[in-house]
Amino acid sequence: MVAANVHPPQGAAADWTVPQRWSDYTPAEHAMWDRLFNRQAQMLPGRAVTEFIDGLDVLKMTRPGIPDFEELSDRLMTRTGWQVVAVPGLVPDELFFEHLANRRFVAGRFIRNADHVDYLEEPDVFHDIFGHVPLLANPVFADYMQAYGQGGLRAASLGAIDNLARLYWYTVEFGLIRQEGKLRLYGAGIVSSYGESIFALDDPSPNRIGFDLQRIMRTRYRIDDYQQSYFVIDSFEELVKQTLEADLAPLYRQLKQAVELDPVTVLPDDRVFYRGTQAYAQAKLAQG
Ligand code: HBI
Ligand code: FE
Image (tube, rainbow, N blue to C red; front, top):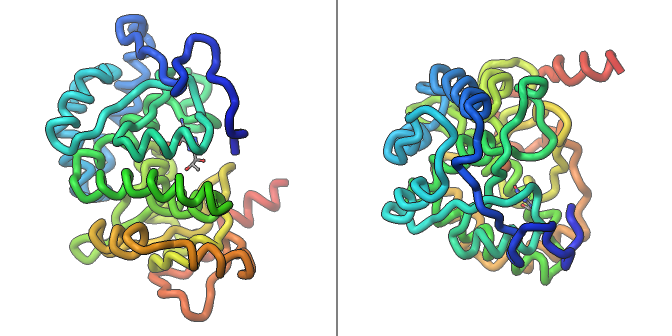
Protein backbone atom coordinates (compact mmCIF):
# COMPACT_ATOMS: atom_id res chain seq x y z
CA MET A 1 0.00 0.00 0.00
CA VAL A 2 1.33 3.44 -0.92
CA ALA A 3 1.43 6.18 1.73
CA ALA A 4 -1.13 8.95 1.35
CA ASN A 5 -0.14 12.56 0.63
CA VAL A 6 3.09 11.69 -1.15
CA HIS A 7 4.12 14.12 -3.84
CA PRO A 8 3.72 13.17 -7.48
CA PRO A 9 6.92 12.01 -9.16
CA GLN A 10 8.93 14.42 -11.34
CA GLY A 11 7.15 15.22 -14.56
CA ALA A 12 3.72 14.12 -13.28
CA ALA A 13 0.78 16.43 -12.64
CA ALA A 14 -0.73 16.93 -9.16
CA ASP A 15 -3.13 14.03 -9.86
CA TRP A 16 -0.11 11.88 -10.89
CA THR A 17 -1.07 11.74 -14.56
CA VAL A 18 1.58 12.00 -17.28
CA PRO A 19 1.33 12.38 -21.05
CA GLN A 20 1.24 8.97 -22.78
CA ARG A 21 3.63 10.21 -25.49
CA TRP A 22 2.20 7.61 -27.89
CA SER A 23 4.54 8.62 -30.73
CA ASP A 24 7.56 7.77 -28.52
CA TYR A 25 6.78 4.05 -28.45
CA THR A 26 9.37 2.09 -30.43
CA PRO A 27 8.57 -0.63 -33.00
CA ALA A 28 9.86 -3.17 -30.48
CA GLU A 29 7.38 -1.91 -27.87
CA HIS A 30 4.46 -2.15 -30.32
CA ALA A 31 5.67 -5.62 -31.32
CA MET A 32 5.62 -6.71 -27.67
CA TRP A 33 2.00 -5.56 -27.40
CA ASP A 34 1.10 -7.47 -30.57
CA ARG A 35 2.79 -10.62 -29.31
CA LEU A 36 0.90 -10.49 -25.99
CA PHE A 37 -2.34 -9.44 -27.68
CA ASN A 38 -2.32 -12.22 -30.26
CA ARG A 39 -1.62 -14.90 -27.70
CA GLN A 40 -4.56 -13.79 -25.53
CA ALA A 41 -6.95 -13.00 -28.38
CA GLN A 42 -6.60 -16.55 -29.70
CA MET A 43 -7.22 -18.17 -26.37
CA LEU A 44 -9.95 -16.04 -24.80
CA PRO A 45 -13.05 -16.57 -27.01
CA GLY A 46 -15.16 -19.11 -25.09
CA ARG A 47 -13.09 -18.56 -21.93
CA ALA A 48 -13.60 -14.87 -21.23
CA VAL A 49 -17.05 -13.43 -20.58
CA THR A 50 -18.66 -12.33 -23.88
CA GLU A 51 -18.78 -8.69 -22.69
CA PHE A 52 -14.97 -8.67 -22.61
CA ILE A 53 -14.64 -9.95 -26.18
CA ASP A 54 -17.31 -7.48 -27.33
CA GLY A 55 -15.39 -4.65 -25.62
CA LEU A 56 -12.20 -5.43 -27.55
CA ASP A 57 -14.22 -5.19 -30.71
CA VAL A 58 -16.28 -2.04 -30.09
CA LEU A 59 -13.23 -0.16 -28.82
CA LYS A 60 -11.28 -1.27 -31.91
CA MET A 61 -8.59 -2.73 -29.70
CA THR A 62 -8.04 -5.50 -32.23
CA ARG A 63 -5.93 -3.10 -34.30
CA PRO A 64 -2.18 -3.74 -34.04
CA GLY A 65 0.06 -1.75 -31.71
CA ILE A 66 -0.24 -0.15 -28.28
CA PRO A 67 -3.48 1.84 -28.25
CA ASP A 68 -3.39 5.63 -28.22
CA PHE A 69 -5.13 6.60 -24.95
CA GLU A 70 -6.76 9.66 -26.51
CA GLU A 71 -8.43 7.65 -29.27
CA LEU A 72 -9.42 4.95 -26.81
CA SER A 73 -10.86 7.56 -24.45
CA ASP A 74 -12.95 9.05 -27.27
CA ARG A 75 -14.51 5.67 -28.00
CA LEU A 76 -15.05 4.86 -24.33
CA MET A 77 -16.49 8.31 -23.64
CA THR A 78 -19.27 7.89 -26.18
CA ARG A 79 -20.17 4.45 -24.80
CA THR A 80 -19.92 4.80 -21.02
CA GLY A 81 -18.35 8.16 -20.21
CA TRP A 82 -14.99 6.69 -19.16
CA GLN A 83 -11.50 7.94 -20.03
CA VAL A 84 -8.06 6.40 -19.81
CA VAL A 85 -5.16 8.46 -18.41
CA ALA A 86 -1.47 7.54 -18.15
CA VAL A 87 0.40 7.32 -14.83
CA PRO A 88 4.04 6.44 -14.06
CA GLY A 89 3.13 3.36 -11.97
CA LEU A 90 1.15 2.62 -8.82
CA VAL A 91 -0.57 5.70 -7.43
CA PRO A 92 -1.63 6.30 -3.79
CA ASP A 93 -4.88 4.54 -2.88
CA GLU A 94 -7.00 7.63 -2.36
CA LEU A 95 -5.90 9.13 -5.64
CA PHE A 96 -6.67 5.85 -7.38
CA PHE A 97 -10.19 5.92 -5.89
CA GLU A 98 -10.59 9.58 -6.82
CA HIS A 99 -9.80 8.84 -10.47
CA LEU A 100 -12.23 5.89 -10.59
CA ALA A 101 -14.97 7.92 -8.88
CA ASN A 102 -14.59 10.40 -11.76
CA ARG A 103 -14.63 7.68 -14.43
CA ARG A 104 -10.93 7.92 -15.19
CA PHE A 105 -9.01 4.69 -15.41
CA VAL A 106 -5.29 5.11 -14.66
CA ALA A 107 -2.95 3.04 -16.81
CA GLY A 108 0.79 2.49 -16.89
CA ARG A 109 2.36 3.79 -20.14
CA PHE A 110 5.36 1.43 -20.14
CA ILE A 111 5.34 -2.10 -21.55
CA ARG A 112 7.18 -5.12 -20.13
CA ASN A 113 10.34 -6.26 -21.90
CA ALA A 114 11.23 -9.69 -23.30
CA ASP A 115 12.74 -10.86 -19.98
CA HIS A 116 9.40 -10.43 -18.17
CA VAL A 117 6.79 -11.65 -20.63
CA ASP A 118 4.83 -13.62 -18.04
CA TYR A 119 5.58 -12.03 -14.70
CA LEU A 120 5.34 -8.42 -13.55
CA GLU A 121 5.40 -6.62 -10.23
CA GLU A 122 3.91 -3.33 -11.44
CA PRO A 123 1.00 -3.12 -13.85
CA ASP A 124 2.13 -2.23 -17.39
CA VAL A 125 0.12 -0.95 -20.35
CA PHE A 126 -0.80 -4.47 -21.46
CA HIS A 127 -2.27 -5.45 -18.11
CA ASP A 128 -3.98 -2.11 -17.61
CA ILE A 129 -5.36 -1.58 -21.11
CA PHE A 130 -5.93 -5.08 -22.46
CA GLY A 131 -6.96 -6.44 -19.05
CA HIS A 132 -9.15 -3.65 -17.70
CA VAL A 133 -10.46 -1.44 -20.48
CA PRO A 134 -12.69 -3.79 -22.56
CA LEU A 135 -15.18 -4.20 -19.69
CA LEU A 136 -15.30 -0.43 -19.18
CA ALA A 137 -17.27 -0.38 -22.45
CA ASN A 138 -20.01 -2.36 -20.65
CA PRO A 139 -22.45 0.02 -18.91
CA VAL A 140 -23.03 -2.16 -15.84
CA PHE A 141 -19.37 -2.90 -15.24
CA ALA A 142 -18.50 0.75 -15.91
CA ASP A 143 -20.89 1.75 -13.11
CA TYR A 144 -19.38 -0.87 -10.81
CA MET A 145 -15.90 0.60 -11.28
CA GLN A 146 -17.10 4.12 -10.51
CA ALA A 147 -19.01 2.89 -7.45
CA TYR A 148 -15.86 1.12 -6.31
CA GLY A 149 -13.95 4.41 -6.46
CA GLN A 150 -16.68 6.16 -4.46
CA GLY A 151 -16.72 3.26 -2.00
CA GLY A 152 -12.94 3.52 -1.72
CA LEU A 153 -13.14 7.13 -0.61
CA ARG A 154 -15.69 6.15 2.07
CA ALA A 155 -13.64 3.10 3.11
CA ALA A 156 -10.57 5.31 3.50
CA SER A 157 -12.41 7.55 5.97
CA LEU A 158 -13.54 4.43 7.90
CA GLY A 159 -10.12 2.76 8.02
CA ALA A 160 -11.35 -0.13 5.86
CA ILE A 161 -9.27 0.12 2.69
CA ASP A 162 -7.79 -3.35 3.23
CA ASN A 163 -11.27 -4.90 3.28
CA LEU A 164 -12.41 -3.05 0.18
CA ALA A 165 -9.18 -3.78 -1.68
CA ARG A 166 -9.98 -7.50 -1.34
CA LEU A 167 -13.26 -6.93 -3.15
CA TYR A 168 -11.33 -5.34 -6.03
CA TRP A 169 -8.82 -8.15 -6.02
CA TYR A 170 -11.35 -11.00 -6.09
CA THR A 171 -13.63 -9.32 -8.64
CA VAL A 172 -11.99 -6.72 -10.91
CA GLU A 173 -8.60 -8.48 -10.92
CA PHE A 174 -9.30 -12.20 -10.43
CA GLY A 175 -13.05 -12.68 -10.82
CA LEU A 176 -14.85 -15.59 -12.48
CA ILE A 177 -18.44 -15.47 -13.71
CA ARG A 178 -21.04 -18.04 -14.69
CA GLN A 179 -22.28 -17.61 -18.22
CA GLU A 180 -24.22 -20.06 -20.39
CA GLY A 181 -23.86 -22.66 -17.64
CA LYS A 182 -20.06 -22.49 -17.62
CA LEU A 183 -17.40 -20.68 -15.64
CA ARG A 184 -15.74 -17.86 -17.55
CA LEU A 185 -13.06 -15.28 -16.90
CA TYR A 186 -13.57 -11.56 -16.38
CA GLY A 187 -10.79 -10.47 -13.96
CA ALA A 188 -8.12 -8.30 -15.58
CA GLY A 189 -5.27 -10.06 -13.78
CA ILE A 190 -6.41 -13.33 -15.33
CA VAL A 191 -7.32 -12.28 -18.86
CA SER A 192 -4.01 -10.41 -19.27
CA SER A 193 -2.03 -13.52 -18.21
CA TYR A 194 -1.56 -16.49 -20.53
CA GLY A 195 -0.77 -18.91 -17.71
CA GLU A 196 -3.53 -17.82 -15.36
CA SER A 197 -6.16 -17.79 -18.14
CA ILE A 198 -5.67 -21.55 -18.31
CA PHE A 199 -5.01 -22.18 -14.62
CA ALA A 200 -8.05 -20.29 -13.29
CA LEU A 201 -10.52 -22.29 -15.40
CA ASP A 202 -8.92 -25.66 -16.07
CA ASP A 203 -6.40 -26.51 -13.36
CA PRO A 204 -7.55 -28.88 -10.57
CA SER A 205 -5.53 -26.92 -7.98
CA PRO A 206 -7.57 -23.81 -7.04
CA ASN A 207 -10.93 -23.54 -5.26
CA ARG A 208 -13.80 -21.95 -7.15
CA ILE A 209 -16.32 -20.57 -4.67
CA GLY A 210 -19.55 -18.59 -5.01
CA PHE A 211 -19.25 -14.85 -4.43
CA ASP A 212 -20.01 -13.61 -0.90
CA LEU A 213 -19.12 -10.04 0.00
CA GLN A 214 -18.48 -10.43 3.72
CA ARG A 215 -16.48 -13.60 3.14
CA ILE A 216 -14.31 -12.04 0.45
CA MET A 217 -13.57 -9.00 2.59
CA ARG A 218 -12.13 -11.33 5.24
CA THR A 219 -9.97 -13.27 2.79
CA ARG A 220 -6.29 -12.42 2.28
CA TYR A 221 -4.83 -12.75 -1.20
CA ARG A 222 -1.58 -13.67 -2.88
CA ILE A 223 0.26 -11.16 -4.98
CA ASP A 224 3.20 -13.43 -5.84
CA ASP A 225 1.59 -16.33 -7.71
CA TYR A 226 -1.65 -17.76 -9.14
CA GLN A 227 -4.59 -17.49 -6.74
CA GLN A 228 -5.54 -20.44 -4.50
CA SER A 229 -9.22 -19.50 -4.57
CA TYR A 230 -11.32 -17.74 -7.17
CA PHE A 231 -14.79 -16.34 -6.49
CA VAL A 232 -17.65 -16.75 -8.95
CA ILE A 233 -20.38 -14.17 -9.62
CA ASP A 234 -23.67 -14.85 -11.44
CA SER A 235 -23.80 -11.56 -13.36
CA PHE A 236 -22.45 -8.03 -13.28
CA GLU A 237 -25.91 -6.80 -12.24
CA GLU A 238 -25.83 -9.11 -9.20
CA LEU A 239 -22.33 -7.94 -8.36
CA VAL A 240 -23.38 -4.29 -8.27
CA LYS A 241 -26.49 -5.11 -6.24
CA GLN A 242 -24.63 -7.17 -3.64
CA THR A 243 -21.72 -4.83 -3.12
CA LEU A 244 -21.74 -1.15 -3.67
CA GLU A 245 -25.38 -0.14 -3.49
CA ALA A 246 -25.55 -0.72 0.27
CA ASP A 247 -23.97 1.27 3.11
CA LEU A 248 -20.91 -0.80 3.99
CA ALA A 249 -20.09 0.96 7.29
CA PRO A 250 -21.88 -1.65 9.46
CA LEU A 251 -20.13 -4.44 7.59
CA TYR A 252 -16.71 -2.80 8.11
CA ARG A 253 -17.44 -2.54 11.86
CA GLN A 254 -18.35 -6.23 11.96
CA LEU A 255 -15.22 -7.16 9.99
CA LYS A 256 -12.95 -5.50 12.56
CA GLN A 257 -13.96 -8.31 14.99
CA ALA A 258 -13.91 -11.12 12.41
CA VAL A 259 -11.08 -13.60 11.90
CA GLU A 260 -9.19 -13.17 8.64
CA LEU A 261 -9.16 -16.13 6.28
CA ASP A 262 -6.20 -17.66 4.51
CA PRO A 263 -6.60 -17.74 0.69
CA VAL A 264 -6.87 -21.54 0.76
CA THR A 265 -9.69 -21.84 3.33
CA VAL A 266 -13.04 -23.40 2.39
CA LEU A 267 -15.85 -22.72 4.89
CA PRO A 268 -18.78 -25.08 5.65
CA ASP A 269 -21.30 -22.61 4.25
CA ASP A 270 -19.32 -21.67 1.13
CA ARG A 271 -21.10 -22.30 -2.14
CA VAL A 272 -18.37 -24.51 -3.61
CA PHE A 273 -18.35 -24.90 -7.39
CA TYR A 274 -15.11 -26.81 -7.32
CA ARG A 275 -12.95 -27.82 -4.38
CA GLY A 276 -9.31 -27.48 -5.40
CA THR A 277 -6.59 -30.05 -4.75
CA GLN A 278 -4.08 -27.19 -4.11
CA ALA A 279 -1.52 -29.44 -5.82
CA TYR A 280 0.02 -26.47 -7.64
CA ALA A 281 0.47 -24.35 -4.48
CA GLN A 282 1.82 -27.35 -2.53
CA ALA A 283 4.35 -28.19 -5.23
CA LYS A 284 5.53 -24.57 -5.19
CA LEU A 285 5.92 -24.69 -1.39
CA ALA A 286 7.90 -27.93 -1.59
CA GLN A 287 10.30 -26.28 -4.05
CA GLY A 288 10.93 -23.65 -1.36
N1 HBI B 1 -2.38 2.41 -8.84
N2 HBI B 1 -1.73 2.63 -11.04
C1 HBI B 1 -2.40 1.96 -10.10
N3 HBI B 1 -3.07 0.83 -10.44
C2 HBI B 1 -3.76 0.14 -9.51
O1 HBI B 1 -4.39 -0.89 -9.84
C3 HBI B 1 -3.76 0.58 -8.17
C4 HBI B 1 -3.04 1.74 -7.87
N4 HBI B 1 -3.02 2.20 -6.60
C5 HBI B 1 -3.75 1.53 -5.54
C6 HBI B 1 -4.45 0.30 -5.97
N5 HBI B 1 -4.44 -0.11 -7.20
C7 HBI B 1 -5.18 -0.60 -5.02
O2 HBI B 1 -4.33 -0.95 -3.97
C8 HBI B 1 -6.52 -0.05 -4.53
O3 HBI B 1 -7.57 -0.83 -5.06
C9 HBI B 1 -6.66 -0.11 -3.04
FE1 FE C 1 -5.09 -4.36 -12.54
